Image 1 (cartoon, helix red, strand yellow):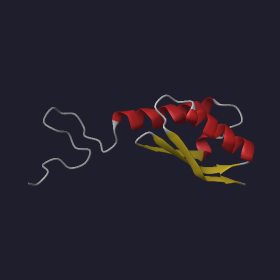
Image 2: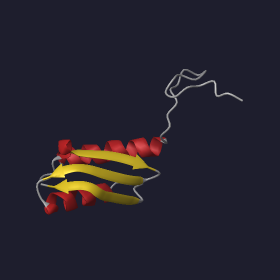
Image 3: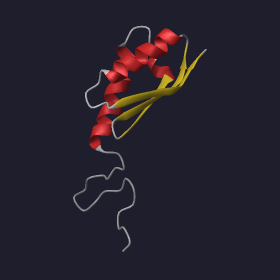
Length: 91
């Protein structure tokens, strides 16, 4: 049977469908927001992606301290099961 709904199109209730669970979307948003307001972390330079509660951080920072602090911030968010930081590069 063919799926009548394509990605991100409204269903019969008018709501948009998403491939990401709401909790993953919430975690990503919360991690990004917290990184933006954390001193010594270049929040705009980091990309955040969450899948099944696993947060992946990537991007470039100036020091290992900044990378470690970003991981610490992400780990502090409710619902985060694990933080993957291998995508962070130190300049």
